[in-house]
Image: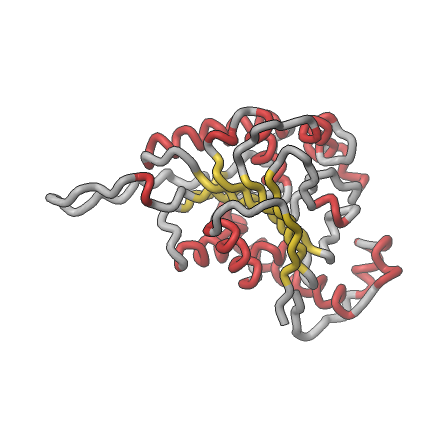
Length: 283
């Protein structure tokens, strides 16, 4: 994915934040970093609007005297799950995009920034999905999850029987194999769970025969939070997976770039393909 635009003088910042990446420093990295900073600034402005948990919405009632549509004929509800120290406000643009292209029931779920265990968060996600299915009359949902949210959703699918409820799981910049970035953040227990070789990551490596959820992982070749970059790919012999490489943008831009949004819609709407690896490039 190629992003164009003016580049501010951010090389000193890059040197401080991502010294290990400077060996291959390029104009693309500078542009991606500039875009990340711009998105971060916008997100900080929106952050207060997403602190409060979203109020569940009731399914739309058919006009009086008409038959209600069969639940199976509608697209499954979409659950949006944010990343570490974030909230549902990060999905403002993606949610609007999905709604404009036919997704009628979309809900964003907040989990507490004080959450210290992926397993606990996965159990809470499971309760929310059960309530959502009961409320909407649907038997399954789709999940679109960013970063840590993808690990929470995947743990629910693999470890808690969530594959019965989750038809498709789309992850954006999720450290499926663990990431080594920012070692000073190890003071937080949930960050330690995102490290390669952690008990949670090892649990996700265990056999998962018969898992019914199709997992699509979008990963960026300029994501500074993935170390190594390929940790955002799903590699598991028992899972039906599709890894989509996105070129030229960073971690936060995966949530807002229109080409990625189009790829997410395609991933949600297509029938389940076999396990493949694809690339997403936009001029």
